[in-house]
Image 1 (tube, helix red, strand yellow):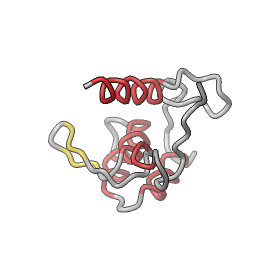
Image 2 (tube, rainbow, N blue to C red):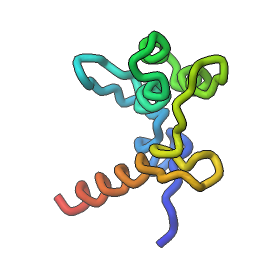
Image 3 (cartoon, helix red, strand yellow):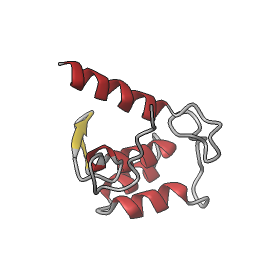
Length: 104
């Protein structure tokens, strides 16, 4: 089975991109995209988390989350760690969700 890549919001699988404009509410907070949430969780419990949530662009949220001027939590749990050595739990969850949607 070929891997499904969704690094762009365009195309067949664009809706699965973290940058896709599908807002959601979690813990009474509205998040513009999953990218906002993903990047903000690197700074959970700090003012940086809220600053990232309030930014309008997922690209800017990504830049803020990648900035090394903020105290960073390691993201090798949710992502691939940048070199493929991470657990990629976000990708695994998305694959499970896709399978559930297909069978329902």
